[in-house]
Amino acid sequence: MSDAAAMTGLPRAACPASAPVLPLTARGLTLRFGETTVIDGLDLDLGPSGCTMILGPNGSGKSLLLKLLHGLITPTAGQIAWGGQPPGAVTARQALVFQKPVLLRRTVAANLDFVLKNRGRDRARLTALLDHVGLAHKAGQPARRLSGGEAQRLALARALATEPEVLFLDEPTASLDPASVLAIEKIVADARDRGVRVVFVSHDIGQARRMADDVVFLHRGRVAEHAPAAAFFPKPQSRAARDYLDGNVVM
Image (cartoon, one colour):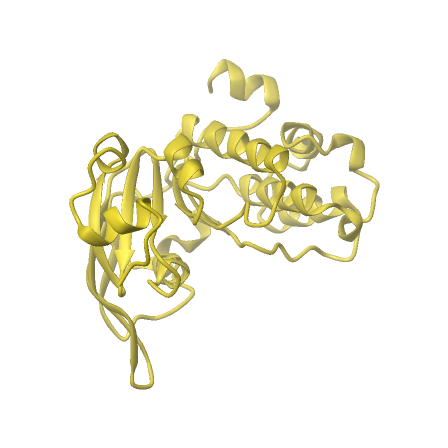
């Protein structure tokens, strides 16, 4: 365990009990709702480390892709493999934070304790986890009285309490004030630095520039471009990505 992790009481990414979760391989991934195709023959490869930012215009399939990769939705066609395993085999080693967290009708501390208990994690870590996300002073407060930014930090604490190897984030900072955005980004960056693989959906180009190691740009349900952040932002190769970064309507 790193010195920083030891000081906060937080572990590194959990050590796999069996086969590794990464890399991810998706081939021909397709999702249809009736006659409408929302993910269209998508191919994707993700390596073992870093933060992947998923960008794209509204309706490009970003949130649906996260749910497919996490095993919450079954694709109409195609295959997903996490370290050679299907999504359902590794779901417990991953965590997903939604844009709008659902909090239990109990205190902040009890929300976190519920996750620790049900996942069989060390419940003595509760205080360290709350301190890590800046909510130790709110431990006894009803969770549903938290501000939007505080609620999202609690959702992140619950996700991190499961010691995930992969952390999915579906626009966790949408509609939050700048201070809350930066606080959440710091927590996510810390998780990445401790070895958690982060897959982060965002509409915020500035945030993507701050957080990304690589960028997946979706357009019409397909990967239009996948490149290291250092190459993508100064010179995207696809017209759709160029239009998006320039603030133009993506056709």
